[in-house]
Image 1 (cartoon, rainbow, N blue to C red):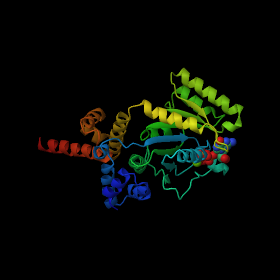
Image 2: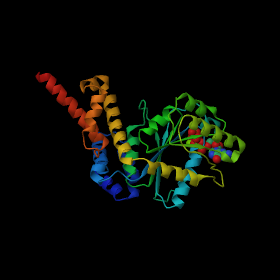
Image 3: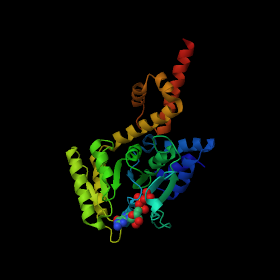
Image 4: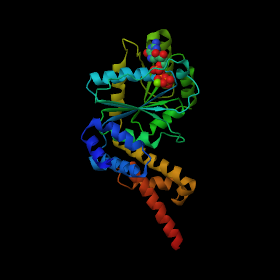
Length: 323
Ligand SMILES: Nc1nc2c(ncn2[C@@H]2O[C@H](COP(=O)(O)OP(=O)(O)OP(=O)(O)O)[C@@H](O)[C@H]2O)c(=O)[nH]1
Ligand SMILES: [Mg+2]
């Protein structure tokens, strides 16, 4: 599979390339890994001349909170407003609790013949402390061609930290009556999300109370995070308010800076996973590695930034051997 060609197609907005792009990015065959790098280079800001324009939204929440149901109505809403959308649903390989055990798990509904919607579920594949590299790469690549790229993960606490690695906008969704999120927020265990969604607003008072309590907790923490109560049952409620909040958040922040930071952090995370603390020390420590990355072209793709770190490590090793 030719990575450059697939990247060129995404850059031109050929969304039907998405399945092939995902297959390539998820492949571990050595030849594919090389082509995947070429693909990511072709959709990097250095090649495009600008950041990939799509908005990458991270959506996370505990099992059974209503994520899939919400995504179904969100996808429908976006399509009705002529926005293209890709969803990357990250399924944890092992589930310990929640919705699926109750056997009432919803699927994301969409029209499979609509080429402006792309939905892919991937197993989380066990990378410690983060999203699988394939998911991060896929979100970055698809943002070149889709107006919205939603990365869905399950959990609360760690999950929204993971999704923040790739998302422009982090949305945490909770269902009414779950005090966990409130406690996590108050105790600082949970990062403050960009948008908070309370699902199942059709349940009435209990949803309104959850919204009010979360709103109050966020204000007391000095955060102005919007809290939106939605319903995904027909007729859906407040989906337009959610989309407005997403767009406002995107408009309020400098996209370039956030994306540079994400690519650097991703490259450094992968480097640290491969070369360990020892590798980092040989670069002079994490801060020195970060400083080095900040001297490079901010439009470089994440794998190219990673390779630059490896090249630097080799240089240091050469230097050490000679002296
Ligand atoms: N009353 C009501 N029920 C809802 C709503 N949204 C989802 N549900 C129900 O809540 C249950 C879980 O919904 P899902 O959309 O599967 O939740 P999920 O977060 O994707 O769950 P997992 O995939 O297991 O993590 C299902 O029985 C849904 O029908 C809603 O807006 N109102
Ligand atoms: Mg689900």
